[in-house]
Amino acid sequence: MKAVQIRAFGDPGELIAVDLPTPSPAGNELLIAVEAVGVSGADALIRRGALAAYGFTEGFVPGNEVAGTVLAVGDEVDASWEGRRVWAFTGGGGGYATHVCVPLEQVLPLPPALSPADAVTVGGSGSVAHFALRHAHFAPGEAVLVRGAAGGIGVMAVQLAARAGA
Image (cartoon, rainbow, N blue to C red; front, side, top):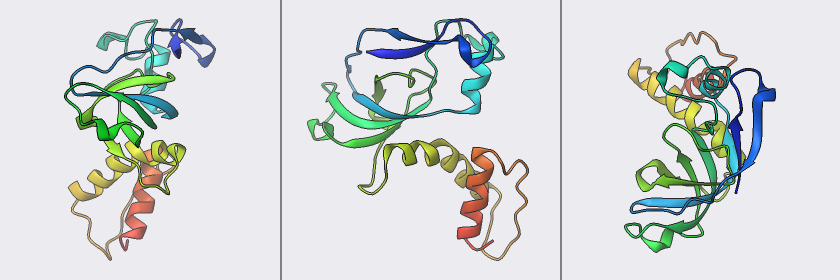
């Protein structure tokens, strides 16, 4: 399979395409053929080396969320998942690849009308914005101040608040 690794910490030019073995799903995992990958601020921090103290090293494959089609499942997963379109949280990396294995509890089926690219666009940012509004006890008719509304989470928070009656 193809993957993108961090050759050396620094600018995006230090990301390189490499060949790696295609993983096999174990136990409760699903093997996903990746069609879209979410690119997060955390990925950029990891690439630059700002999070090296947390164990990220050169050679790391970034990517926290993916969308695609399930190709195979581990022996603890119902075979009906095979062939389904899904969104998945990778658990910390590995998504910048053509294939990734993800535990079943980190996977959601995609609605038929939602493309993989749209799924990763709203996936992580949408859930963070949703829970932030929920934590703030937002109610329809209230005003919401979103600092940094130009980023993915901020844009989603504005859209979700407006849709909910802000």
